Length: 331
Ligand SMILES: [Mn+2]
Image (cartoon, rainbow, N blue to C red; front, side, top):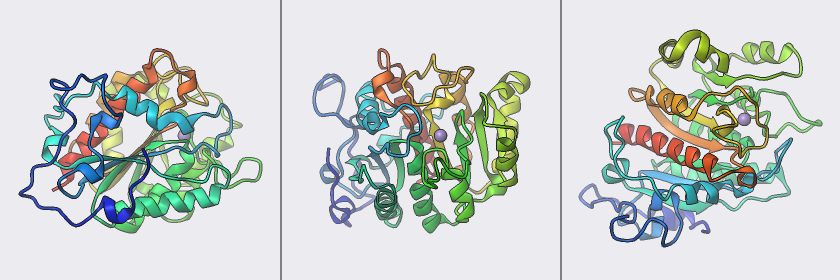
């Protein structure tokens, strides 16, 4: 899929009277047939009204420090999302019936020039947020969260970042480079894009370069709920700590798929054993049901390392959960 122009994407044809176009019906056209889009959602040009929620891919992995390949992430997640159905049983919401949700295809980003790629991602994301659409971005490596947060900040001001990841991603640079997949949450803090007092990492684990890493993240203002905290505090303890930290304001959710244990998500570039399960992550996300989720990304899916689409299915369901949460706030 290629990207529609912003004008085509968000032509002013919205009317609350027009029913949204939902996904291709799996009871009419078999789920394994037909074109691939996230959850078999329509493209913007096929939808009868202006999108409320936009899914787009960001096939970019030039910021990767270890195993590359997340440039192929968006279409892998789309392929694994064919089985998603409409109704979210736990959140009791049918996002695709309630709102116009579309898959706008992939952004066109320069694979050799990171600063230009970041600019292009920010500009495209702003096109959606300025038109009052919320987005779910599918990466791509974690570099993309910085320009996505710039766009969200321009619309909503400083937001809380809820960052699911094995890694802090608050390092200063890699090999002297400031814009990489290990640095977005330091840059976002430096640029004043986020409300650090409400932001936190969840799922951190594994060896660090040294004991300064966690201290520096703390000094930047982030709180941390580690993967072992799921054992020490239990799910209810984690939920309570997360909700207290996030408070009531707008939240941006960034899910690095490596927050999951490699047994649940082998297809990623920097796997760390000892992660949380898919069920634990989905349960944690559902605890955001009362909050204002204004945007989200899923990053670091590198399909060449997947087995039987395990990682793809996990990412697809995380995406459905995030869209369900966002659909609860769209009016
Ligand atoms: Mn990350």
